[in-house]
Amino acid sequence: MLSNWMLVAVGGAVGAVLRFSISEATPDTGFPWATLSVNLVGSLLLGLVAAATLASTLSESQTLLLGVGLLGAFTTMSTFSVETITMVEAGHWRRAGTYVFASAVLGPVLALVGWKGGQAVF
Image (cartoon, rainbow, N blue to C red; front, side, top):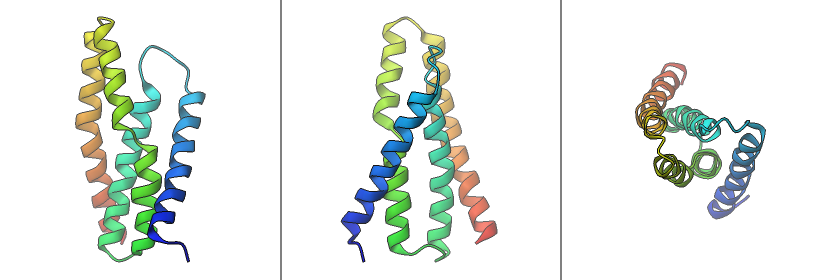
């Protein structure tokens, strides 16, 4: 059986590769759709993982692998921050504001949807 550290590392490796793959596959339109997408999907899925964990549907090991490792590496606050600064520095205030608003409002809303949906299922 893998240690907790290894579970997080394996999940993290998979999450980072998934995030990189999505970034590479998403066309550059001047708006950071890839980062917004992974952060919103990750929020929804982490809400679901949290609900499953609280309902004892997921074990501690599964929660570490999926929630901490995979989703922790899949989502990215640091890239969100740098992309926001880059848009502001380029004078794209409206684009940056839309990005910050969508991330800050939709992320928690989707986490709640995942959580409540998970509670209904589990």
